[in-house]
Length: 515
Image 1 (cartoon, one colour):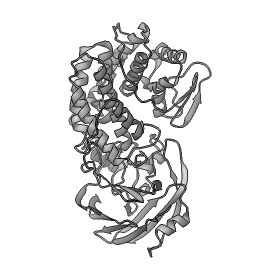
Image 2 (tube, rainbow, N blue to C red):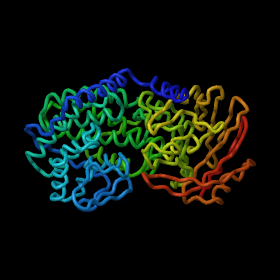
Image 3 (cartoon, rainbow, N blue to C red):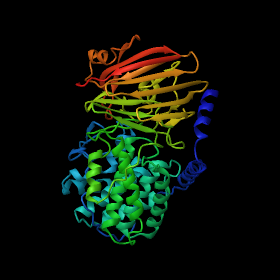
Image 4 (tube, rainbow, N blue to C red):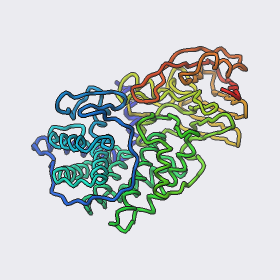
């Protein structure tokens, strides 16, 4: 019990006062409203304006036919009416059902049926009326209605009421990407309904949060390449909105363009040659628009990329003729909203001749279960685990207690060395040295503790391929199996190797010219 209290304290101490204040406020307010039987208003008289928007990005198809859906690689068919509270596949699946990202893949008859089904059942809907799904749904409904020139009083009045539910429940208790999503959606609602209250709150959130959340090198401060893509998509959609709908004298336009240009530069720096992202922290394929889709969208909006070298986001990319290596020498991010962080300091990915070789193990679930705990652990990353413990206290699905801090970095053109203190009295230093035909990795510990180096390989990589890469090493290599998860609910068998050592180890990864 004491250990749990200490872990909770070590987590809460990183929160901002506003997060704690709003958690307490929303909790007390809910109790009061429930006692009084007060319920939200679900329809509000509105006057709307169909918006002018150029083509955006269509998220991957997740709707098959009437009442049949696939989200997160899990399929569900509803026999009769849609159960908008369906929870058998977890909360994230339910969220996706209520986001309405799939509208661009439906015919108009099905689209209106789905929207009206949601509205007709709205008084019974639970997760779908939380602020995050309202935010995404608002943008998706407005884009769809505007693209198809649909002006429906019932839909508009419901949507307007939902925006005021959102305004009443802004996610100040979470901050980070959640509050940004609220702000982006309020901007769409403000323009669609010409609502000054929604606009002023949106402007306040976006200017403050984008200035804080977008780092000087252009990275999003939660340090997930996938969430960076999502946030960049929202910025680009907001530019599309403001640029093509004269209402507020374009006063946010320059600000949004500058942020997007910087974010595009970071994404270009962190992406592989083919546009893939490394799966660092909570990242998975098939959720966000791809880097190439975002670059093309930015081009349609006439946005130029602002290229700034990677530095304070903590990532580095080294590209040689026949390999690309992306490494993590950064802090847990962001300090007060670290739910998407992993215990992965000094993790890295390696691609040889444009093909995945050493990979991050990925993310298959957001449920608070053993699989989620394993995927966030140090042992699931390409770094050093000491005494069987995590470098940072990841727990509870989206919590982090004490965490590894970077205390020293040395860099030159072909080597990177960094030290972290995640194991308290035992400091771990890792040095990468990059050559045309090899990478040398040196790990050292300040005490003679038991360390284990692990490398996780892409599923197509065979034992003989690994032995060839490590042929210059004399250390005993243990081969095991792990599950590689490039997408939610996708688990592919692959090889992981582990090498035990004390105090120091030097490994040479021979990079073949052909692979």
